Structure formats: C-alpha cells, structure tokens
Length: 463
Ligand SMILES: [Cu+2]
Image 1 (cartoon, protein in one colour):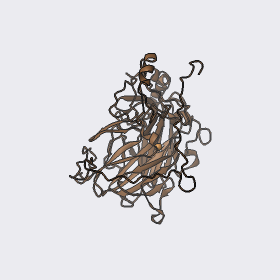
Image 2 (cartoon, rainbow, N blue to C red):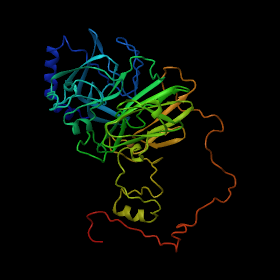
Image 3 (cartoon, helix red, strand yellow):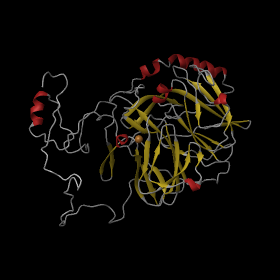
Image 4 (cartoon, rainbow, N blue to C red):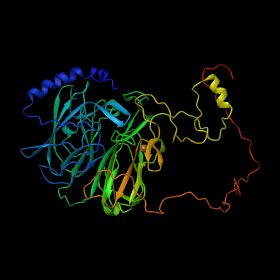
C-alpha cells in the first residue's frame, strides 16, 4: 500500500495557499485538467483554434486548452503525483496535472499561447520551454530571467509559438531534484499547414531514469549515474503501451531525453530516417537511413518510416541495462562456474543462499520473492514465453486489419505458417569452427589452465 502521509507532508502548506490563489484568480484561470490513469489517451481533433493532426503521447495525454480572445490558454499545475511504472510498482513523483511526465502541450505555428503555472510543490519552481524562440523573460530560468514561483503561487508565461517542431518543458529551479522526481513534459508546435510533413501516426514520449530502492517509493534525487529504472514516459516494460499502426502507415516517433545519459533507440524490422531534431526539421537531403539513433541528453529526435512489415517488432533502447528493471547490477559473472556441492555447503551457513547466473542471467521461469512495490529485473510474457525485458522496451505492432486512427491493442501477431524460427531435429553437418586462437601474429602456444578467483563475503575475517 502507498504511504500517502509522507507524500503530502511537505506539500500541505503549499496546497492550502494554492487554494487561496485559485479563489482570487478563479475568474481568470483556465481549468486545470487532470489525468488519473497511465494509459495512452488518444486526443480528439482540436475542438477550437486552428486545425492540426494531434500526436499520441505514449502512456500519456494532451492538455486541453481554452481560447480567450484569440489566445490559447493552458493551465499547468506542478504537484506531487503517484505514478504506476508498471503493474506492481508505484512511485511518489513530482509532475504536472496529476501525472509524470506532464501532459503534452500542442499548439500551431503562429499561435499566441498563455500558460498559467500553479506551484503546488513544497519548494519554488519555474518552467523552461526547452527549444522555443521566445522573449527572454519567458524562458523560465529561475534567478536569471524570473524569480522562482513560490509554493502556492501562479505565474503566467505568454509567447507566440514561432517555430514548428518538437519541444520539451521542464523546471529550471532545483533541477537535479525536480527532474529526478519526474518533472518534464512534451510540447509540439504543429506547422501552419496541416499537410506539411503529414504522417498517419505521430507518437511522442520522453526518456526517463529513476533510482528507486527495491521496495521503496521515492526516487533518490542525488543519483548521477547509477539509475535502476529506465522509462518511456515514466513507465517500464511491460507497462509501456505498444505503438499500434496500420500496415502501410507513415509513422513518426518523437522522443526527448531528459535523463543523465544517452539512449540509442532501436527499431526492429524497418529502417527509419531522422526527420527532426531539437533545431527543427531535417532537410531531406541531409537524412540517411538508420535502424538505431542515439538521443543525447537534452536532445529530441523525430524518426519516420513506412510501417510496411506486419508483425510485432521490438522497439527499445539498445543499452542492455536500460531494458532491465531494478536489482542485479552488483552481481559477479558466474557463467561457467560449477556450483554443484558448493551450494549445499553454503546453504548450511546461509540458509537463503541461491545460485544465480551459472548458466547465464536468465530469469525466465524463476520465481523469486521480491519486496513489495518492486518490478522483476526482466519480465513480460509474450506468445512464446518470457520476453525477459524491462525498462525502455515496447512493441511496434504493424497490422493489415488495423483501422485508420485505431490505436487499440490488436493482441499478439499471428504469424503465417512456416514463418517462425523452429527447432531442427534432423542430422547436422559438422559446424565450421575457428581453432587458431591467435592467428599468425600470436599463435596459440598451449591451453591455459583455468584460474578461478574466489570472492569472500566482506567482513568475515582472514583469508
Ligand atoms: Cu538507454
């Protein structure tokens, strides 16, 4: 169960004064829309303002607005939230309007935009509109271009969305803490002409990293490198929704990176081109085909491809530790070590001792008792068994029968007969095998004896 007491302790005073503010400003503040579940919410066609093709935020949503004398008005509320990373694990994060990441803001090139930002955090904040052309005083850098927004206060940002493209928003106040707690969101400025660079499906998400002790609920905000939860939009596989598309669709996926490291994002079964970066659309002559594109810290990338190969295609970060969940980083490599006999002896001393990893790291089929509120390191059941993935991993589902605009999960792919890898049970020719270990330069002299280094548990006396 969640412990909500600690969670609200710090924010209590802020919540009270925020109430006072909203009473005073009730007449002029637009409604602060809130999302309470972590499923992908496909936005409707824009009800007011200029037309555009909305994006689909993976496990997220787009913030509704109101038009006020030609100005598009949004209301962001910075506040503590509870985010489910995947079924079985929730975290105390900070976010916007009930969620981390915050809702996606969608506007059209040339729109005058007014954003009310209410701070319900226990400390000051600000919002930086990452990548935008705007008046300097609207850039959201606490101390440099504005005072911090104190708890309970509401600030107004107003500018014209001059440049179409892919943007992010995040605090520029106590950033280490606030971004490590999940404060970030996506911003799309659509082109004036809805036909420009039009695609059939346009997905967006932010890359995230958290360090949450197994069994814990709150990220450790001082962590610089050793994170243990790697997320798309603060979700980990199998909690990340699939990217569902119709065969033949032109698909765009936009991702932004607000973690502390780079993420080589990799798509199976298709080649894509990078059509957009932080700075805008990539000129067609400057695009080249790729299957993996690295997204550095603070960057955004838009990739595009035609989804012409039906199937369930893996889509993930290619750092293999980023497709794993918490635990297991400090374990020595025991592949090839024969534990027979040893395990029994150790078990007499340490009753809960368990041999791990002598045949590789596979956790498939292994039932382990985990602390409450923890995700298995590698998880997810597919049609052929355990997928052994976590973290930054999901599936691009390409289906012929999928209707235009339908994002509902079609289930697992049904492979045509004879198109799945299968077990060979006939006779085998002898395999070709390299036997010359050193080549001409360093010929193999003799077989080396195997050296085994034994580690002793720390603090157990002499060797
Ligand atoms: Cu990664």
